[in-house]
Image (cartoon, rainbow, N blue to C red; front, side, top):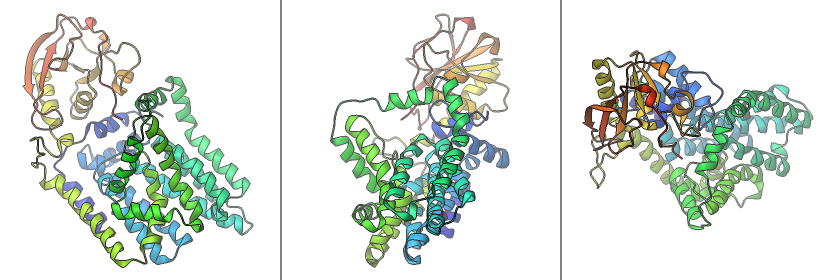
Length: 467
């Protein structure tokens, strides 16, 4: 496991890809230590801010914490599993987690799932320690505080941590190993509420905009059995085909009812959502923490299956970071780069920033979230302010909420738009255009306009956040 962590770290330093829109957005959130953001809780922005403050503003610095966090998560899974299973099972559980495709991918990017999984692993270990103390007739206030911190930080990482709470409660009802003393439980809940209270206050002050965003992306689209079935099929890619199959088998074992409750809760919540509306493959990723232990128990007696599971996971774990070093030229059948989401950002943003500087502009305005994320990242320290076209109605992304253009922002703004996009001002004068290279916007024409009268900026349609 240590060798694979070093591989991921070393290849991360050689990574030739660029930040995705989401990663640049998380960095932007971290420029102010607010207790919330448009579409997610604030923790990922704080983590990114600390990392770039320590190691400099670079792609590697943004992604560096992911390797450390997933390694720590695997170690915590090992510690929890040793309390429930023989050492060999515990070791296999940590390895199954560490080489799962979701973790292989997550270790090469910075996503909200990374701190979420670490918080869940810490919560699992703390709950088991509280169960042991309760069984011995003891109280463990220090561990209760640790559980509260883990739950609170998990909720600050991603609201999907809510899926963990009912699973933890059911686990406590089903298994004494997961059952804390009442006083410890109340202390843990109090600490959790104290940790998330500033975030709840931020949400209230901003009209619960994050929950409105969640409501929008989960809006019912008609009953369907195909969506939950597709989601289940995708989990064979999230956890690994052998690991997920073993997890499904392990759910029948009543001896591990506590772990089964923790694994099933997020899966069932997302499956229910899939019946009524859209779902994404990673929405239930929390199950990987208890699920790795359950799968290891089933697989350990079957050496061939263990070898296959680890070999497949290791192959993916080696290939993914390597592809970001030597595979940036690889193409899909349609000719687009295989890693298009992580390419082409600098070319468009730096072109716009250079054009703005040569035209004496002090503000660059854009409508689309991806362009705003790239401009914010690449214009840092340039003296050029980045602003969004003011929205008409509720904001559609973080820049519209926090950085909509105001006349006092600058007297010489330029606006960056995709070809075919509605002009916010009739008198906007085109001054430059470029065609985006292969990548996130490959082949699209991007235009830069001068605004003789910045006060003309009104509301236009805006692209929203991703799901």
